[in-house]
Length: 303
Image 1: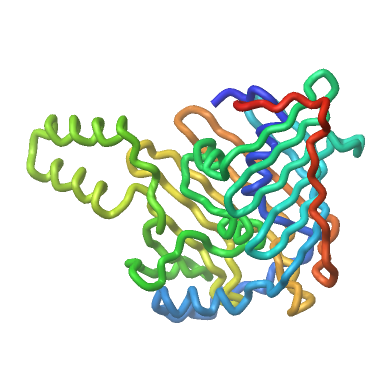
Image 2: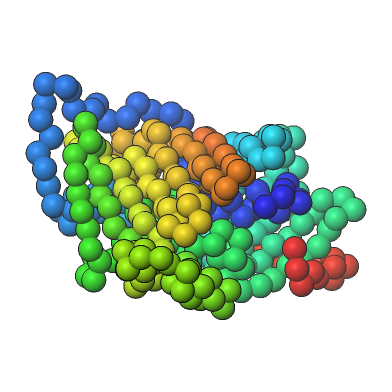
């Protein structure tokens, strides 16, 4: 996927970027002399849920960079969140002048480009995000990613497996909402089944179709139960999205959130890396979410 417009793609991936703040040390890990007790996956996920930040509105200032196609683009962004309602972003380069704005709601995506000689507005369904990243992600998922909370976990009907990896619990499951199965995929699967030479190959392909195409893995700290990393792997294409939370603000028990991290998207030979750090987090006041497309701006139907 070529990087056609740096700022447009910054928007897409900022939707997936987690937040940070001034960097505080991670919770003291379990020492080598300690033994991490095996636990069930549901117990681990329940303990992790107890660490989630409680809020109605959030505001944060983020700095970071996007590395793609051997190019690096630095950015600053103001992000505002209304729980279960909206994510608002104001994007600026290093000089601090706003060049673009976005508003994501439960059913819509709105973009506003203020770049000289490329000013436009864009309005579409939130499914446009799914088309870009090839995952079925809704507004609640985006907000969870920003706050270091697992996404796509089906605690009722899901199948889980947990294991111990040094001082970390690893929970494996499959993504709750599958990769979209378009006509091309269905045809490809049918062709593959016909070409499979052995019953074992056929059963494997059928199992992929029945059980879902995306495998999810979550690495959760064995002492704090904070989320360290989550990874989603497309079994058919081997495309992966890895989200790592490298540091957490845990000095204030009522304001626990990831403070630094990265997202790595690997798709065949292409790799996109997003690194960030936040300078401020506020959750004690209400925010507005201004978004208006000026009359003189072109309204694009496609990006």
